[in-house]
Image (tube, rainbow, N blue to C red):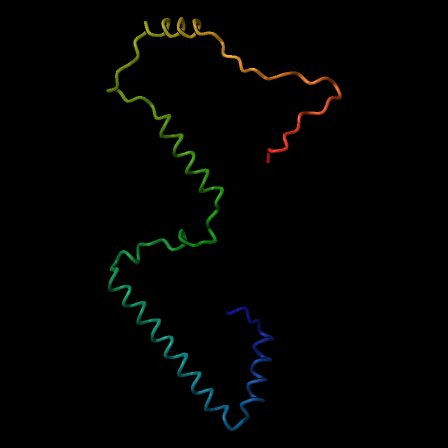
Length: 138
């Protein structure tokens, strides 16, 4: 309730009694009661208007699932990533063409015919030698 605990509410009430005085306090209490009743009436009217516009779908919504305290970003990301992986590894359907058995030896021969790719690493540093430092690197 607006971050006010019970003790703070009592202190505010005592300050209101002192500032307003016993003469004007009933008048302001009646105004506060009218304000609260008006706010409740507006809130219930808005709720009914929303229910009329949306219809019966509003009752079918699971509000607990939409509670922001239920969101765990790690779980959401994990589920999204797993959905993508499941799409990639779907089993082959019955109507799809099967690979030919003769294609396997040809693929193995092609793989063995390729030369291995090597990446040059640059000159090797001696023991105790400092690594080169680039002044323009960030």
